[in-house]
Image (cartoon, rainbow, N blue to C red):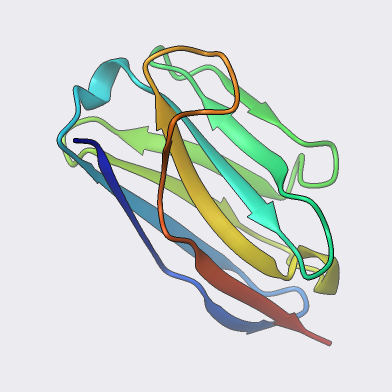
Length: 118
């Protein structure tokens, strides 16, 4: 059973930074496709960033240049470094994973709230 646990969310001012972490257990982590999604109030869940087992990354246009996804296969953890945060980045952020690149991924964390105040 794959389990994903996010941490690192919180309240930050405009222009600030946060780093989200997602620790995985019960998985063959190093071969997994990993992603971060977010859902703002009243909006659909959207893809933020993905990273493959070979560390190739992909980003939503709205976060490109500000957010960085990376993984640590020793700690079985995927991170999302968020810089230059904007109020529109406010959302619940979810970690997701699967053994294939097909979305939506099958395994999800419980989410962590990120609030950017202006």
